Length: 155
View 1 (tube, rainbow, N blue to C red):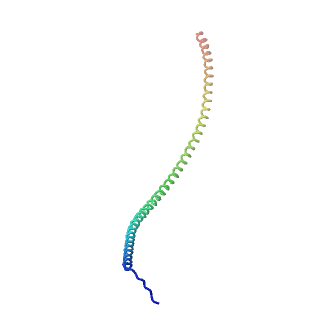
View 2 (tube, rainbow, N blue to C red):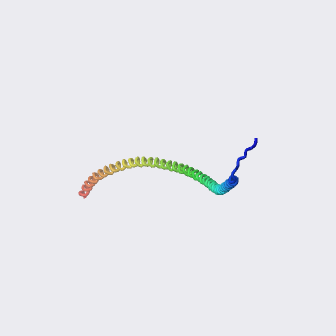
View 3 (tube, helix red, strand yellow):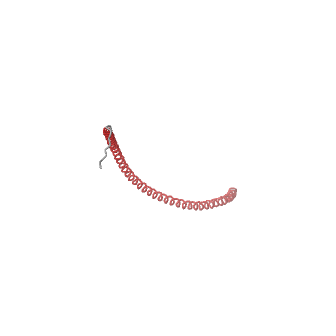
């Protein structure tokens, strides 16, 4: 069997070649565009990587600062607990002293009230005794006056 060959017009070959050149040129352009995009993406990623590295360094410094602040806060809290305990002891001691002094004042007030009662009784007894003595003296003075008048007339 013979192979049948059809007549191919003369413009098909050059058109196909030209089409292949256009397709190749477009593909080269696409590849070049992809390379440029990849390079830009790589530079952007390098910038972002550097930014992330800077952020990570800042976070490490922040964590270190927070750890130091936490340590200082713990020390301050320990000191505050110690001071609160000392204040509590001082307050307890002061309250005990005040209660002891109040008991002493109550005892002395009771002693003073008893002393006042005794002194009042003594003063009342003395006043009655003085009044009684004055009455007797007055009565005696009247008698002495009579005796004197009696003696003075006789002379």
